Amino acid sequence: MSKGLFITFEGIDGSGKSTQARLLATLMRDYGDGVIHTREPGGSTGAEDIRRLLVEGDPGRWSPETEILLFTAARRDHLERTIAPALADGKVVISDRFADSTRVYQGVARADLRDTVDQLHTLMIGREPDLTFIIDMDPKVALNRGLARNSGEDRFEDMGLQFQIDLRQGFLDLAKQFPNRCHVINGNQSPATVSGDIQTVIESWLL
Image 1: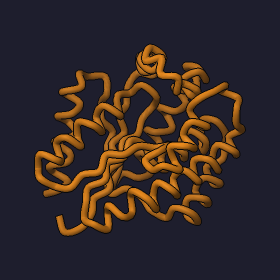
Image 2: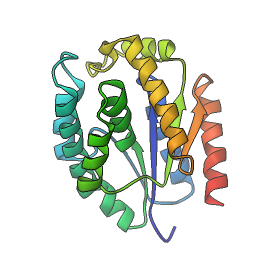
Image 3: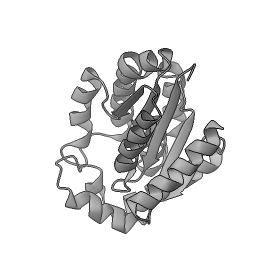
Image 4: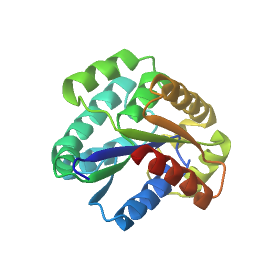
């Protein structure tokens, strides 16, 4: 490719988006393109430090407002250190979450702060993905899956089922807001079938 391509994966906790991001990175590498597989919060040294503050600990550890600032700080470092340099080199960047997660988690599901999220994004990030996959699945199934991982990074899962239901609706509404880049994929299928659906979209999009 003559220019970089920025692809993101979004969805509720336990939806399988991390698995699909990894599978797509493997697929894109088979095509011979330089591929960077990354994640949020994280993806750079500074952002990984902030990640631990966000995904570990008590659900009430931070207010939604504080979370927005922490996520934005992590995202800025991620953008500077990882995403922007890779795109400038013409690479494909595949990120497990980006700004859409903050729009939904802190902007809608936790509090009515979408305007604050968007203002900070414009000021400090100023970059949208080229293509976004929203992995949509049953919130109860996804929550049980997420909690079963027992990863220690389950602060948002600990906010309960209703929170996951609100997140799902937030992501579906977001897909309607950005129809040109957002593709909703049925996550209530086998990982191989989900991956096939994503590959179909990628192939048609690149053509």
